[in-house]
Image 1 (spheres, helix red, strand yellow):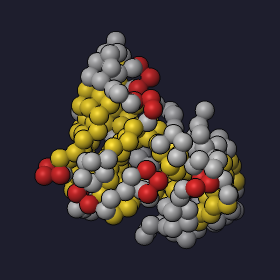
Image 2 (image 1 turned 120 degrees about the horizontal axis):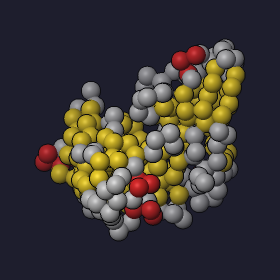
Image 3 (image 1 turned 90 degrees about the horizontal axis):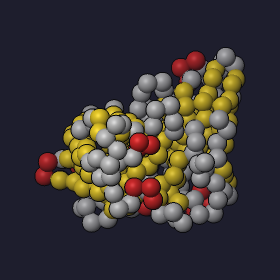
Length: 126
Length: 110
């Protein structure tokens, strides 16, 4: 059974930093591209970032470029999101998501968000 | 304002068929696969359709997807109260170099 368990969400002041983690199990982690997707309270879904299976390819939403960094440690079956210069409007539930495509994919070659964690809540507030 | 346009809400009676549209452009839907997601209240989203019209195992054939030009459609037949949820479309946008979601459609089953 695929499991994705996010952690690291806390209350952080505007301009602060935070690192989210995602522990993956139930599949061969290093075979898949992984994503972060967020959802502000009462709002829709917003894609944040992706990282290819080998970590060599990353993509970011324009709104987070230069402030967020996605990374992974395949030896630990773990995905990370380093978030800097956080803004109030980035208060959201952050989901760790496995792509459906087996092997390398990036951008439009990826097939969609197959499995989702339960999310970790990041609150940006003074 | 979302890059992909969905109706904010739809309401239909139990047993009927509903279609939810997702309108985009040549930089996204027109040249990439579309996927659809169901988000039941208080839960994480679930993949319903990938590659325009493919269903993951375990998804009933009451759910189907299609794409034509720069628009995609999710159809649900034999509506059940358990289908009440928010539905989202998603695809890659070549101009933005980013995945984009529709704004979501809230389905109410009367």
